[in-house]
Amino acid sequence: MNRFDGRTALVTGAGSGIGFEMARQLLAEGGRVYAGDLVPDGCPPGAVALSMDVTDEQSIAAGVRQVIEESGRIDILCSNAGTGSTTDPVSCTAEEWDRVFAVNARGVFLCAKYVLPHMLAQGHGAIVNTASVAGLVGLKDRTSYCASKGAVVAFTKQVAMQYAGTGVRCNCICPGTVDSPWVGRLLDQAEDPVAARAHLVARQPMGRLGTSEEIAQAALYLASDAAAFITGTELVIDGGLVAG
Ligand SMILES: NC(=O)c1ccc[n+]([C@@H]2O[C@H](COP(=O)([O-])OP(=O)(O)OC[C@H]3O[C@@H](n4cnc5c(N)ncnc54)[C@H](O)[C@@H]3O)[C@@H](O)[C@H]2O)c1
Image (tube, rainbow, N blue to C red; front, side, top):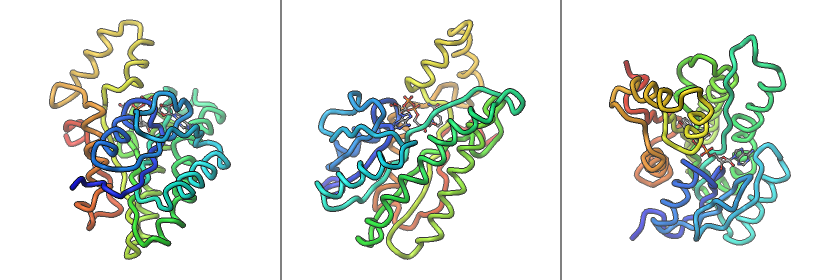
């Protein structure tokens, strides 16, 4: 018996990194997985790849419609698609703020908006939003990113309270620094990528970055029945980064 036998999941941002791992592990544990991404070619084999842009309401509506038409249900939503920014409050433009919020905050809201009616009708469902430690503490040069991830944490709690007792739970994960393609791209852009990586590792209490596999495992716990009494929480997975 697998944890996700008979369960249908939608994972956004499943074409790379953490979302890819969420989708891969859900599949490995018996789930039927719809993998949404701007670039769906990278989604794990075995998943139904959906071309989805979480900034586009019609695209989300169409994706959820397809899940329901084909599977008749949706048990798990991993709202994981995200984007970054590296500006301070003065250099961050209104456009940059809006671009980041459109994916990280508005996208998470819209995915929940379209999935929740089905979960409520079923009387069963688990939403796991990908926030970040950046939603809990202030990080230098991450103005719109921190604010958007803080919005994800607050939205998660609001949804949890709205529907506590209906069988629908909503939680979020707050990864620290994870060795995903995203961080790889950031390091590649650094003047000295080796020194930049060493700096990231040096600030880790455990002396290493996290892996996408480790983050996905935590998300799957929150999505599983083992977390039946957990709603409205933020699970920090950061190797101790923000504990000190
Ligand atoms: N990597 C880290 O250190 C880290 C830390 C904390 C939180 N996170 C969060 O984890 C999530 C996944 O990050 P990752 O490191 O796996 O990044 P990644 O770049 O490897 O993967 C992100 C995926 O999201 C997709 N995506 C981006 N915009 C989209 C949109 N508008 N619609 C649909 N898909 C879109 C991309 O195509 C990509 O496949 C993000 O929400 C990120 O903020 C990452």
